[in-house]
Length: 85
Image (cartoon, rainbow, N blue to C red; front, side, top):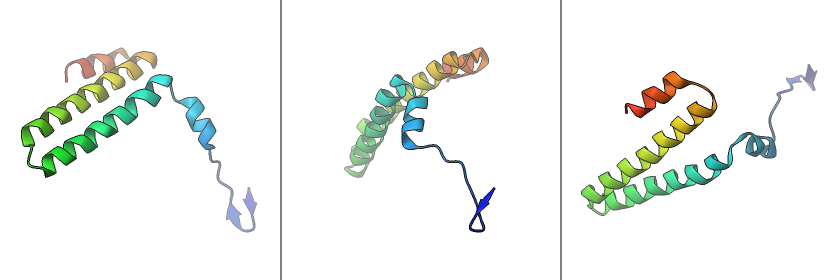
């Protein structure tokens, strides 16, 4: 279907995107982003060891969240793969 010569695109509204996300995602994703910025600040301040520890912590949270998501999606092979990381 076209309007004024341009194809119409189906777009989800922001509220539809929010409704599709789990409450866990709302909490965990900002935490990982904050840890990433914290690691960057530490690294730029020549605090390489603390930056590495922060990166590892952020990765652990992200992998844990991915495993929970795979569990909810009923993907046992993906859960197992993530537990081996």
